[in-house]
Every structure is written in C-alpha cells, then in structure tokens.
Length: 200
Image (cartoon, rainbow, N blue to C red; front, top):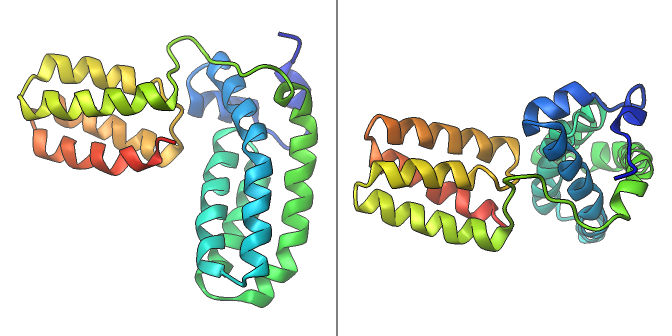
C-alpha cells in the first residue's frame, strides 16, 4: 500500500489518537478509508436534512460524524460536528446555518487528505469482519448466551470485535464481554441487542 499515514500529522489528524481508538495501524488505515468512502452519502444526507429543515435527522447524522471523526483522530472536525449536534438538538437553526459551511469546509479538507486512500480497493485489517459476518456472529452470540455457553460466547465476542464499530458500540461490546465473564448473561444480551442496529 502506497499511503503513508504520517502525511496526516500536522494536518489536523492525531494519528496516535486514531490508532488508540482503532487498536492498530492496520485497523486505523481501514477506518480512514471507511471514513472517506462514507463521505458522499453523509454529505447527501446533510444536504437533504438542511433542505427539509429537519434538525432531528441532522442531529443523528452529525452525531455519527462526530464519533467517526474522533475515532480517526480528526479532533477539531469532531468538535465542529459536536457543536452542530448540540445546535440541532436545541432546534437552533440560525446557529446550524451559521456553522455548517465552516464544518463542511473542514470535512472536505480532511477528505482531500484521504483521497489517495479512498480511491484504493477496500482494505480490511487482519481479523476485521464485514457487516454480513458481524450480523451472523451477533446472532450466534445471542444463541450462545441463551444456552449459557460462556466459552462459545466469549470467543464470539472476540470475533464480533473485528467489526469496525464506532466508539460507543465498541465500549458496549467491551462491557458485554465483561458481563459474560461474570455470568451476567441478561445484561450482556441487552448490550448486544443495542449494538446490532449499528452493523450496516
């Protein structure tokens, strides 16, 4: 692979934060690529939400972008999306309209840095799984918990951790693994059910 993540240093992306959240350099590069490849859809959603003055839907979209930006170490951009999220939550259309252009400008600048990576074939880190396999694994995990099979459940949690969840879901999965270790199956099931809708 020809993309050097060190080119991002000093460009508003904290590489150490990104690798800390994703777990390895390989997974970080995969997360950067997903961030780029999801951008066209995200920009379309933002445009549609603004055209419809739908601040509730905008809040959901920018919340996800806040988390994803933080996960790749684009902390300034994450803060900008967080401000938009708060303004949307408060129904403050004036603030949204005033801050959105600068936020999208910064989003575009980060995407430009990632363009070479985004144009490559889809990269998957070692141990990373796609949405189809993650959903199948989650179903198997729920069945294992229903059968009180803690050994199988523990191994399936590890496999499910290979899906590139956002920060919030990753923390829930970690807590679910702890619950399984403590034989708190009902609590683990509840968390897994909360996580499943994030697999897409």
